Length: 133
Image 1: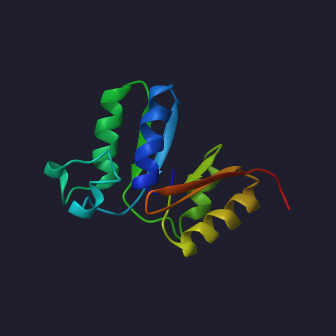
Image 2: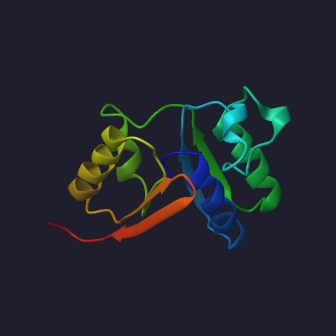
């Protein structure tokens, strides 16, 4: 999963609760007070902490059998191949077009399906991209 913000806050607990075996969670952000409304994985006492570390702790307590690897970095051109080639499915929970295009291009290159989600205010959109061009 790329991104650990609002979209990921909704998806991650469900994936872990149903017993996903292993995931890699990538995000470089830290928890901010402005995140607390839509990003339900986080709480006031976590402000300033790493989102992926906090998510890993909470999700592991939900299901200790789920292996959650964290990467405290942004997905970028120098690491996208490494991470995307290593997984079966990519879930795009990012908030910028540069990273979204990088995910798309890398998934196409490795023939990896990905779930694309977007949020604006309190509305969301989801799409599954699967197949080669």
